[in-house]
Amino acid sequence: MSYVVLARKYRPPNFEALVGQEHVVQALANALTQRRLHHAYLFTGTRGVGKTTISRILAKSLNCTGTDGQGGITAHPCGVCDACRDIDAGRFIDYVELDAASNRGVDEISQLLDQAVYKPVLGRFKVYMIDEVHMLSTTAFNAMLKTLEEPPEYLKFVLATTDPQKVPPTVLSRCLQFNLRPMAPQTVQEHLAAVLAQERIDAEPGALRLLARAARGSMRDALSLTDQAIAFGAGALAEDGVRRMLGAVDRGHAVRIVEAVAAADGAALVGVVDALRGLGLSAAGTLEEMAALLQQMALLQAVPDAADADDPDAPQAARLAALLAADETQLLYSIALHGRAELGLAPDEYSGLVMVLLRMLAFRPKGEGAKAGAPALPVAAVPAAAKPRRVVVAAPLAAAPGVAQPAVVASAPAARVPAPANEPPPWLDAPFEDEVVEPSAATAREPAPPPFAPPSVEFTPTALGARWAELVQRLNDAGSVSAFARELAMQAQCTVLDEQAAPVRCRLRVERETLRAAAPCEKLQAALADALQRAVRLEVEAGPADDSPAKREAAERARRQAQAEQIIHDDPLVQALMAQYKTARIVPGSVKPH
Image (cartoon, rainbow, N blue to C red):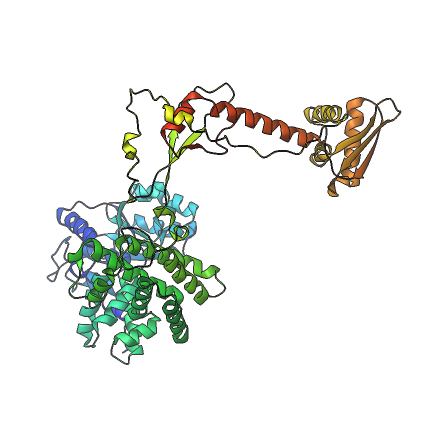
């Protein structure tokens, strides 16, 4: 007899044997007991969590005849009647499983629905189970909508999908939807222990814990990995063998990394990475194991009584939790999570791992949250979360027309940093709602900070500059010049403009070589001739342009910006705010002239 894999051999035959989906079992069992049966069910969830298994159990519950052949609909199928045994064996004629991934067209669905008009041959109900239903084409979905909404009383639909977002809302509205959750590692570990006990296979708890974590919520994946581990270990499951099979990183490496970070020992961190490289262990697996350790440490720091007495790693995590502050543990956890995404961008994964670990060393918090004895870092190394924050005060200013209101920003001191003894507490600086703030005499004597000065524009006006800027503006308003020719006109300085000559003589000076090409020159010459209604001869030479329309526009913008900022700076309310809040200032660029 051929070997049956564990995932098939231990498929739950009834609701009582199903683990990890109690919320679905309770709802279906109550519906079967009370005979409140829906005509269509939709089971969603990741792979290996029991969608097909629940469908088969539901089909057996609907068609079970009991051990004496006289039974009816039940939440506890007997498993020995012809209907139960045939459904388990996959040969019950009234239970049809359709894989929508390979039968996604309208022809396959139409053929299935054509059989729906016939009553069951052997059972009490016909059950159509469509797996991966989201793979059906749009026409296939449309073809089944009417039957799905009003099927015959003897027909039940069971739909299963791993991606419910791709199922049309018209189908979702016709189904009773159940979301099957990924199973907790502890649930998977307990089930694996029970299965291996029935198989009479020795297994170490650490090996089962590794398999449960590697399954990532899928019981089928856990049983498949267990099959592989049994073959790898020659009939026994040892923690070391399972770790090597999975390529998992030993917890000891993560412990040494945390210890090195707590001691600010960069050489030890690099040594751990060299050891991982020598063993051929994954850098991503190292950060994953470290994130799991830090998560356990953070839990123990917040809730010391949350330690699992059965977890052999709990004492080690408790010891490390005492070495780091809670905020530092959170920071290291965040760096470990984000570092995994950056490994693919590094020259190689081990150099990327080194940088992630050195980042943990560099961005250690500073303040009361850090443990005593930890080396202090310069301010530049403190994360942004620990640095002073900026508070934006929205000031309802009565500004001049055409000037946008600014943002006045006050720099608040960092948390847990005491104020100097001669300074009043910050909450006394804030006025009451009905209090009028007047600048004091002391603050009036202090020189007001200068407003933000926009960058100066080098601009040397020439005699022909104004006339050339006027001509260019006419061209822009007419829209008769192409973009490249318009750029030539804007960036060029007019050195000769003889409008009395025939044809009109115009000489331009421009620095960019691409603008001196023949094509934009010809187009600009044609546009000038059209604007002046006379023939134009255009000459272009190389050289810097001291007075161009573009520089004139930039100078005008800078003038209007400076004028607007000066208006805001001179506003009495702004001056009162800046006098009240010692570190307040006008954010550069927040004033926008209209």
